[in-house]
Image (cartoon, rainbow, N blue to C red):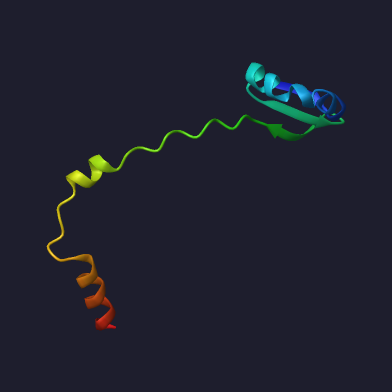
Length: 75
């Protein structure tokens, strides 16, 4: 983890992506005290397909609209 003061951070702002790749995370300080931590946002992982889950679930005996109608009428 690299530590830099505000002035250095402002000057290195155009190189922020490269710094994060090299260091992993940066700490920005003011007068020697940490005020911010900059970490890279990892790319969102691909969402899994729910097809396998749907195939393992048992089929409903009643249609969905029948279940909703019965629930609504019970209130």
